[in-house]
Length: 611
Image (cartoon, rainbow, N blue to C red):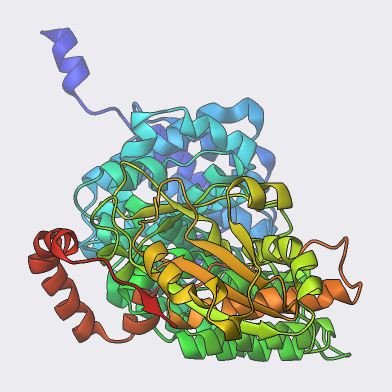
């Protein structure tokens, strides 16, 4: 009975209270008269002398903070608050810095954080003030401690993940001060995780947590907005951490689903505002550009109907113009990141893409006439890996619903002139054209719905082995009505033969040459409609003749051509800004197309389109 009474009775804290009182007298710390004002900061509610606290003082306060068994929570919070005073007096965070030999301190801090988040009510003014004081101490510890030391916390498993979960739930109901402090701590934890090669917050907690996680994007927006230009020097790290965390959330498919569409639009607004307002030399612009790159690559951007894409293009264009000036002080890393964004971004319309290419050629100091775009204009300097997967959208899906059936298009062109020269350089010219336009090398993936893969660039031998160039010589001139003039019948018969989209490329070229009249030839470019239309066929033919002209003049014999970026699908080009039309068309396709299209294909007679 005596032992139970000993365990249940509260510990005598008189000795600890005397210790705190002595340290307060040493620091000459006292509460100001407006202590009940919960909106005041620590420096407003406490006044202190400029006397430097001793190392022994910091050690004694740490002893109280670490006593998670016997010291009550309020006493630990008060001791942590006084440690913050020591840092302010010294103008140094050394008193709260944790070394590699003191990882037990981190475990105690995480344990006390869990207890504070569990026991203190953020809706109660007094308890919210205590919670804010503890989160301020936690912020100081995370700022002062190296990431390799903080890595010991990530090995705590469920305790660390539970603390992050409680911090996220706190965002749903708390004052503005606590709201901001909790978000700052989450950003610091994530920054340490990132440097340690871990992803607990984004990769685990946001995946598994059920309630409260949806408030994180709004909390990050609050921090980003409050740290707007001009950002105080002491808040820069919090701004960068918030931008990095938001970008990593958008890059994670599961976590990105938690971002509200309106929050994403506000984020784009902030990026445009800050990218415009920041001074040229400000390194924060690189962090905004990295976030913008993640945002444009995320699925949320498409859900937002490419929100303010024109304004984004104009901002990036103006930044490139400023960076091209002789007296520009804009960092090179920022300029490189802007170029990557421009080449990767899906702006849909061809006019926008041509505008980007002209802009970047101007910045690189190149003439507009050149057709060989430099490698630095690509998204990066690494060789792309093949095969590259491409999702089929819109009309592409409609014409690939039934296997073994294709809709062929033929572009016919009659040429007169140096046909021998044309035939001589045609294999190399066709190879280069295939390598310039990636969709010409697309194969549909068998067993996968609406998915194609872009194959590796071709060689002249591959052009021959895959029968992509078919040349035929005739002995009668076209004017006599011989076989050379029967190309229409041949085109119709060839269009009745379906292209196997799983093994055959969607383009091939047939060349008929009149043997007795060597200055006449007919080119027939056959293509599958799911990767081609009336305009794209003419682009391919013009590209072939362009390459023949270069080769015949002895130009670019050994140079490899640059592959164009993948053009956006018809779906994205035509419907990205027409949300009502998109909803109607998707509804019609979902209701009728899948049932009616295969039957319609099988019951219809073969036909061809002559362009």
